[in-house]
Amino acid sequence: GQNIDQPTEMTATEGAIVQINCTYQTSGFNGLFWYQQHAGEAPTFLSYNVLDGLEEKGRFSSFLSRSKGYSYLLLKELQMKDSASYLCAVTDSNYQLIWGAGTKLIIKP
Amino acid sequence: ETGVTQTPRHLVMGMTNKKSLKCEQHLGHNAMYWYKQSAKKPLELMFVYNFKEQTENNSVPSRFSPECPNSSHLFLHLHTLQPEDSALYLCASNEGREGDEQFFGPGTRLTVL
Image (tube, rainbow over all chains, first blue to last red; front, side, top):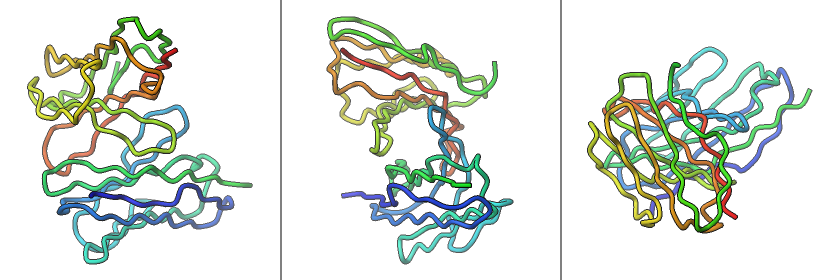
């Protein structure tokens, strides 16, 4: 079967750095997405990785290793507004998007 | 209006009611999606429409009936739902090409009594 694993919940301190991991087992791979979803709001796009390596976008970076079926989202200089759920999703060989259950990130002052 | 809009934002219905959810995208996209989001579970893809044609139906019960009259509008017609259908229903759209990000609406919070 197809599976995306990410931690259910993480806690971090304002100003610190946090890494949210995502591992996947899918039938084929055609890209990995990270989305942010604040409580009661729509998911919004953060990043897309299709090749191995690190993609940096301001305070957020996303890393991919296709051989390991692994990705992480790195958030630097955490702010209170970063408290949200972070969703990992993989496009499989049929270009279907397979979603993880999301990681709820709690930022403490 | 910009982006993807959904109405109503909240809906409470009995198991014998018939209601419809509406989604509209103002982005000129070709593909539209319905998802179900339950607490602590992955997003479940329900239906996909590409250029108004349904291209995906992920074994969704027939009590959910989609309708796509044009590329900008998507409906989800609901009838004789069950309490376990209570969830957040999200609509999304994109260009329909591989690797395209999806743009989501704010969702309809559905409660079935």
